[in-house]
Image (tube, rainbow, N blue to C red; front, side, top):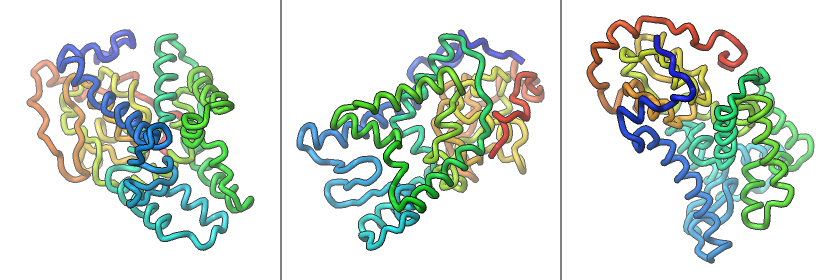
Length: 318
């Protein structure tokens, strides 16, 4: 077992694959997140309305409706009547899309708050902050229930008043104002209080999309797991590290697929691994065959890493 020190995180992948291939999915995610916001902002800023509205409810080219499914559920819970066909169709389009590609793809590829929380994680590494409050992974599901309950009790879309995603968009259009307080609060919480605290343990949207994508077709696969040398780098970069062991160490029925709905399909494990253990594929089929096993890794795959996450609150699956 050769656990990689944090100061060398990603070094082997860069040496083996080159800098771009060791960061390609991170680059694509940032491009998608920033590009999505830019498409929305082209309207109010430049008068070019490709996407009209915001991430909660929008129109593509004034024709295709898109509605955030959790917003739609809040509308139903709040007792909104006479919802337009555009709202219903828009929610169905978005729900089907994320059901197919993986619900939490929204979290890692679209949601702008992910940039804030990833920055906080980077800060924890640079400052070598080890301590972290142990929040149960099930907390986010209680937050989801509370979000829907608040809508039902108040008859309003109460969560949308404090939803960081909505706050970022309103701030970019009209000025951040108190929005900075929310974003700085999330950053400080993830940096100083709980590692991956907001996205991994509290965000109700993350909880909703994890349920929606639990049976999605596109998954991260570990077909190259025989080449794993237990460097533990994938555990360090994965926002939901509890999803890794079942695929890499004890895949059910011998199928090395990350099946948990908590997986965000962010691709960081693919980027960071120098041995191509991971790749995107389907639930029942790999897109690409793993490269041949290197001779020096032949005997390492059977070892159980001493520093593998144990059955703590951080690694329990909700």
